Image 1 (cartoon, rainbow, N blue to C red):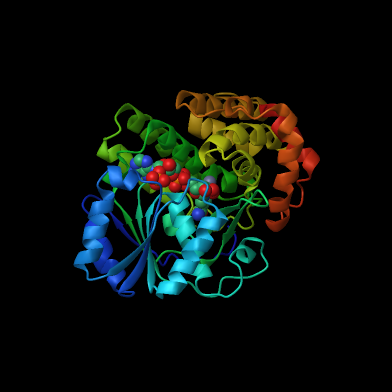
Image 2: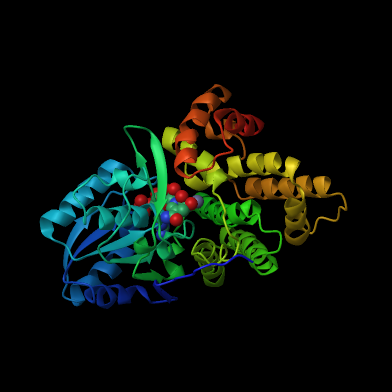
Length: 387
Ligand code: NZQ
Ligand code: ZN
């Protein structure tokens, strides 16, 4: 167990009929707010009306910034920053999934500086202040509702970079599982894949040999994510299953699983971000292709943790660590297929000939994230096993 500091300042309101709190909770930070949301799902499922009624009842003046796209882009963030500055907003309200919340975080930070917001993502500037941020989560996946991360794509350079800062954690996040009832099967599955990836990035990259508390916690989160996702796909309005999946997605990337693991990395995300940057692939769909490939590559050199994962999560009964590891990866890959998430580049309509370009693109993020062992050859060799 390594030393750690864990600071979880985000106030979470979880459960049925919590969306009506967004007005009073936001009014605590100011009277003029920027409302950020996506391409319209909240207008089809009444969440928009619930949120705007609550903001109006709290006496707030609302400037809207709709149109966040999945895999949010820098140009839309810049427009939001301009709006926030012009109107002198005092807080930002994000209503959506990870794309909307990340876009809102970038606006919150960018509104407080004169330099371009992209410098945060290139690691050239650090976040020193942000506008207060309140969220209504509508999709269980990214965990952005309770963490300090944000991921934005620069459409000009075709880079999808993520950066993090403690200050970026939302002040308040409202998690009402009924808000996710309308998430379609594909994005329900992609979200569950993303949750599992967040857990396994830390589970497999920690170098600490003795993390029994975190291991069991993470293994349990993976098992619950698999079970609740399966139930949600069978019955999309199953409240309990949607609630379990939503809470798993928040716990997977709010800092709790990584506490005590020491230095960990995000190599599967480093590679996937290139698929999303270059081909606009849904984040979770890219991960279900990259994860088995990276896991097989890593397990070949160090099978023990992958064998533990196979035995504890998929009840693999195989004494040989290498064989057990591979069986566990096969079980996970089969589960990705079962829930309709792709497992090959071909299924993503990405040709094998694109692998060198993807590997070169990923290297830029590998450098910023200090993932020193990855060069284009290694990334290409990993991708060649999932083409
Ligand atoms: O645009 P709208 O109308 O909101 O439609 C969205 C979008 O088309 C739709 N949707 C969301 N809630 C819905 C719904 N449709 C029906 N009913 C609802 N209740 O779902 C689609 C996907 O939404 P999106 O926000 O893109 O998905 P997700 O939550 O998976 O977020 C993905 C983004 O999160 C980033 C990813 O890189 C990606 O850009 N991540 C952020 C992280 C962080 N901040 O810590 C970490 C993650 O690893 C991830 O990288
Ligand atoms: Zn992710």
